[in-house]
Length: 409
Image (cartoon, rainbow, N blue to C red):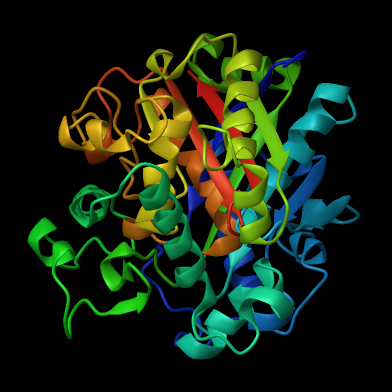
């Protein structure tokens, strides 16, 4: 990045909550995230100069658009605050972060508030699955199909199987690791749930197949959640650090980013990748772009990864696309324990989408917040030892929008 963008901290709601059962509107989720973020960072409302909201489908789940306007109700000092809402399916939160960071790099503003939010438990799973289908090409890939996204990401696994071979036990290990990691995370949706690798390997009434090779244990969660972070210019961050009594060198910053978009239909992505060793070459390129901008050579300059495990197949893809293994050999990093908590390069110490939860529009912001906690040594029981650089990968649709951040502390 030409001008450093600092991350001063943030706040995450408890992803185990059901806000509909609490009788609370999506605006209440936004308010809690904003108030929590200001409290956690010590930034005053009057210091925030712009607000960005990441959200996928509030018009469907909550019958509410124009979400940026809800920010101005969160603090009296926000009256007249310029705001906007950003959408890119499950990558909506990352697009909001990219927009906010670009404004800081350009010198438009010195302090930006970013909130990612999704309220998903307003409808039953079948209706929610149909809503999620709009992240694909709805008419061609989702209309009239029960739970289309498990089937689409099942096809991702099928493509790996066709090209390189894929064993279900490797996917089961990914699931088990993410559930185990979530138990250390006090805000994770599944922190009290049971899951073992043996259970994830099995099928039946308690682990039914719902889309080809995708079983319940392979899936991320339906989640209500909101997350906020504060991004700042070097000048603002320096003054903030001085009054907080912290060293600017130990404050998290966005060191690099990548953003690429592939065709919307999954079959078109596969056709476009014919002859390429990477199944999703646009995702691979977003990762390489982030490495280049961060000035690092490869994944071994990282201490951890927070990746988009909407299904175990997407994490399987991320392993070789980040470069932990050669293309098609993600299984080696799984069998060698590289991705485990305490492994050479832990993935999803937070629990990821499978363990921590997946409120669609909030996920990209949550990943960057967790990366920030890691590189500043504030991740608690899921802290990676001596973490100083963590990357995130946030995917919208069936590998359509890929956003990557490298966070340093």
